[in-house]
Image (cartoon, rainbow, N blue to C red):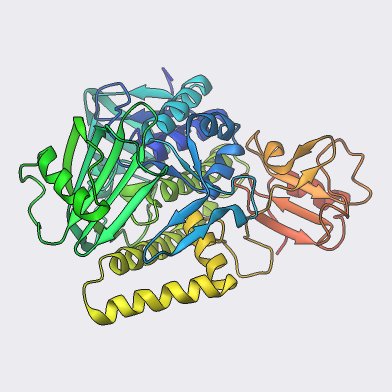
Length: 473
């Protein structure tokens, strides 16, 4: 990076999953990228997130990373919520018909390795203190390094984002649940399943394995509402777990104890000039459904190809406006859905418990409602357009040559799929039996359909689409 003027560089602030995926995508696209992280170098094994949902796994598959992570995690095909409501994820229309239980630090390790191998630059012990932007770029000031010049900056630096504060964006919202306790412990007794959860009276608890001999414990008791800095010991955690699950499974040797509150907040926009927000810097919500890390990773997948297309001169800068218009509504929906789940799980009044029971009955009895709930929690149901196909998730269509669409997307480029006269053009194509719909599909690098037509395009239109001029109006 030495000697660069910064006119083509992106500075990513934050070395969590969101920032790492974004940095890897940009570096693989040939875009100079520098990652700033205020923590010392090294990935901590103390983490809150522990689940990858189906759509996130599909995005990772498009980068050739999903199979490695699958081997490190534990697939869970049934997701229990409350009152016996269970979602059977094996019904999902994807090769990842499960939630993958895997600690965040394993995800970060794989994503950081990919970004480094692609040429991303990392600067640790580097805390952003401010930034200024003008018509040609952004100057980032940080402790531990000289000012950096960049074409664009992405704040992926968490709930207390220094980038968001520097551009003056508010973060309105409120706490939805207080005094949640977390611990990583060893167990003397094996739990009955991969994920053990229960709610009894005013207590909730969840146990989930990390795969290294430790289990993550998440607990909450309505009667013990204290500040985040109140002392916490293993006895309190055991008491909550015994109430919620009936026994504490012989918890011992905690390596980490923490107390926190969960907020619901969202920035009013994810863009301020040449500065973007992604992940927890843009939105935070309750842990219900395990959607936090997943939503941030999908923010990164949406933004990275657009930055790469603009900086390489293949797209107009106005393309970057679509990041906010596409991802902000998704963040708002995740806030609402996770908030509904946590409020129903915490229900303490007769009418709210009756509502929870009624919802459980409806989702259990009606397949369409159950399918909608599963697609929303797993991310498969989100789309970026009002049309029947445009903007929707492209399924992993089988392609000739014993390959499939998500493998064809691994170079990080658009993929044009056609039936008919272009089948011998040396690029991926469809057959009628594999795809009975439109005869031409243009797939975006993030796996969403950019354009669909009933007939193959003329040669000049095909060339324009492949050159990333964009789909016809």
